[in-house]
Image 1 (cartoon, helix red, strand yellow):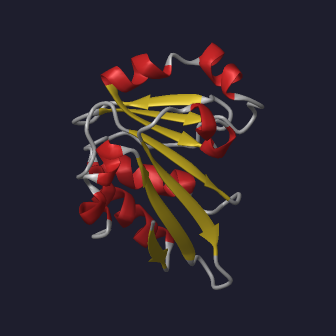
Image 2 (cartoon, helix red, strand yellow; image 1 turned 90 degrees about the vertical axis):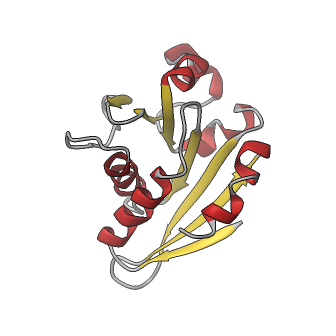
Length: 153
């Protein structure tokens, strides 16, 4: 596991932009953490790094947003889901992965059912203003081979 400390929303955005350089079609990122901890901000940075030109918004009410960049970005929110079954009824995750990168906010709800390869990021508010802790954990061989690159975030 790798720890990243962000001192501001802008720095969280930059971490996401750097992470985008490591991504390829088929990658899955699971984000968890407190409300307001920066999950959407991190996704905005990923989108910027992928060359997405349109504004990125939280998928809380839409449940899923899609953005075209150098790689298609699927941004999902499973906060209201109680199980992975509900997610699989709403989305064909394998299909989404076959066409782009998938970022799932509140992914801890379904992480036990996700298979063997994803990047897990837990964001936590720290006492100081706008300060965040990001715990980045590669799961599976695809991500473990990129661990040294992840450590450079």
